[in-house]
Image (cartoon, rainbow, N blue to C red):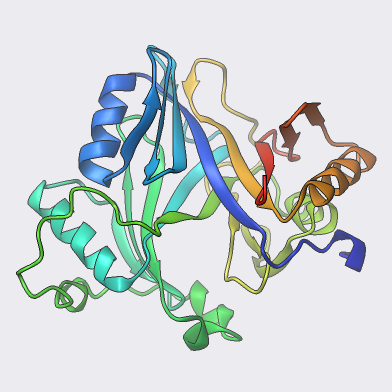
Length: 288
């Protein structure tokens, strides 16, 4: 069970996600035109994309890569816009561009729209409802509700210019992972790393957060129960980033991970740990 020594600071968040993609130019075009991210830096092998000066996504070119849907790794990454009006503007732009949408849900804690990139990587665009609405009622998140798209678009009065870029304040709200087993996942993310377990759905899903948020990390076995990580020739999650409160806390997490028998690689400021499903997690700290 989690102890005070393994409890992460309330300021803990998630950050940049790195993916491999089959075609770098194709992916840059998708994330620029369809999602609204900006190219912050690039060369022939990789591109950094984000909002303003904040990197949210790093794309690594892997020509010929294919998607493995049943491997452990990414289910989706979730880009959080600052407010409902921003989500409505993004949706209006997606409709204008005829962007294929996989689904749209009202999760009570948030309103979310789902899609995928050309390599099959899952994406969520969402806006949180005010915390006072959902705090203490996280069980409501598990109910399946369709997003009221008409009501969302009613936020717009028709005079706003088209949204071509995501607005300042957009960040990586959470990540959702495909894992091989829920009990071992809880033992790692709660008891070793130090997240709070906010919701658990038997042996099929579990959600984790810090500071009372609804979830920074979601996990499920819906398509990956007992599976292993993607192969080297697949378009896949390379790592997701956990942003800790301090360098001291990062060192403490690495010590706990190693003590529990899991891999931790430290090369200067480059710190990667690996969860029981073989998923790599980059550890950063906020004040660096």
